[in-house]
Length: 88
Image: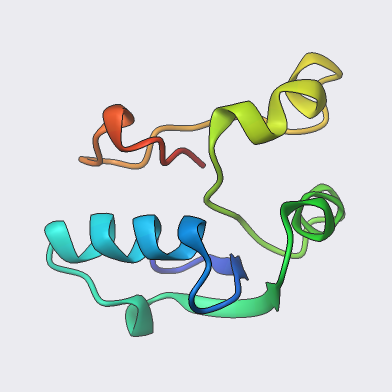
């Protein structure tokens, strides 16, 4: 996971806070990720992921439409709890 570039929400967003908390729970700091880009909304993150700019951590509900079209896929992050609402 740490080898891939990540497209992130901006610091202070609820989604970023949840992601940072889940990373810390597993002994990782946000600084260990290779941040390629930061955006202030999920609508901007999805096309960047579709274009191959990096991975993003988002809730499955926020990408339901793109998943149905086969544009994005949800992947569990090794060792992270699906109950956290965090998926890749």
